[in-house]
Amino acid sequence: QVELVESGGGSVQAGGSLRLSCAASGYTSRIGCMGWFRQAPGKERERVAIIQARGTTTYYSDSVSGRFIISQDTANNTVYVQMNSLKPEDTAMYYCAASGFWCYKDMYEGNFPYWGQGTQVTVSS
Image (cartoon, rainbow, N blue to C red; front, side, top):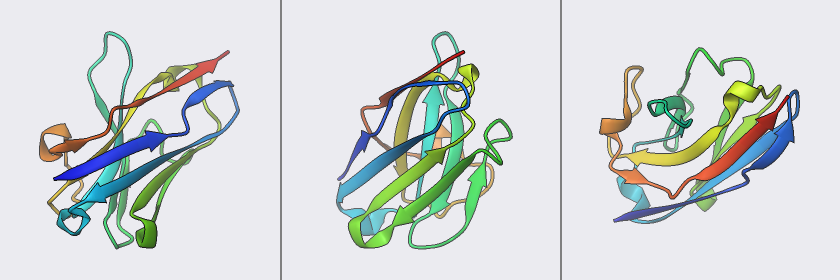
């Protein structure tokens, strides 16, 4: 089993920045890909960014590319997403997720069996 715990959410004004963290524990050697998804009220869950575990391959959604940066600390099994130039439309619950598969471009939430509890990000105009 893999456990994921997110932290770092909060409220910020448009144009501001936040950094989310996701600490993995348990059978972390099973993880091939980790990433962040988000879900706004009334909308479907959206993949934001994913990163190859213990690697460098990353994929971003078009809506965050150039503003968000995903990274990892392999020694501490932690994944981060640095969110810059935040917009009100970035407001959502953000979830960390992990998959046993290696990252590939078209991964979706069904490829990720492990999920954190979520952390709220609110961006005001």
